[in-house]
Length: 442
Image (cartoon, rainbow, N blue to C red; front, side):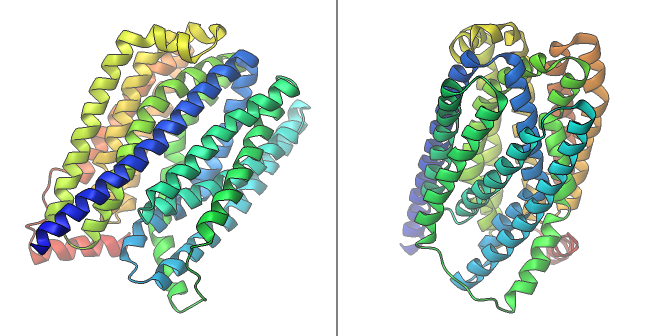
């Protein structure tokens, strides 16, 4: 009877997690798509391309200097046995992310100063990008650690408010001021400052407080051990996800970066948001069952997740093949419609990327982040080879066609390394010792 009630309770909580994850991603996607539609009416592809390139630097700072620590916090949270331990872990993750973000901003300013000196351009855009990096890291830290605690309602509302305010304030400033890059960036900054202050206050009112304890040193060791291999991993992830626009900017023009970035964003939002819903539903539960030694249940959850991602990819690509002209007409200004032919290839690449992410989850669960790095390297090497060649020979179409190539190679290698088809519920003691050894090494 108790077991039946426990299963029912687990299902109810899973459905609750699913509702809030879906709400957050859907509301954010609608806000972003509507904002992009209006913004592309107000700014030229050249301005949009410059915003995309600066946002790419912000994304690099988040991925390389803060997200590895945030991921470590999410993975270690299920292993915390008390409120004090969770508070201590949060303090360690926040401190490490803040210090590394400060370093990232310094490097961005240095690079901006060199670029401005060589091109006689204004360093002010890089200063705005640095501020945007700081507020974005704060947002991601708050949202992701709430997800790790399975507080999906708070995470979804925080994400949704930020996603609504960013385009709203950017459009308002562009309308009031001028169709310039600095007004768009300033709108993003003010939006995130408002949402961060609001939700930090709301969540902080109930957040546990913890004094420094002997656990801090151990948490730092555990976080660094998990995060260190993720630093080059996140760099590779950024190269695979955003490096193409810098290749386009170097070989072509900023206007073509704008065309590509706007089109890529529309397609990627549909696939990435859907995949993120599944990630937020399944990953915390998968990690929790794995950490508790419930291998059979974690295996079942993983394969339910994989099946959902495969179905999502097939349905999404099929729908886009039929509706791409309508999507372009609805989501982009007329001056951006020439890039509609890029959509199908980008969609296949996004679907393969989502599949590779879920296939790699056993490596994260086992804390084998160094092995995960090998899979990501394969995709980055493939991208570094094929992207410049295809852009040089085929232009924007070549950049789109390269997506399925490098994301497909990456997904295949990750599957071979993670072996998600291997059951772990029936492993013997020797195999369990091997897993423990791999976890300790990572």
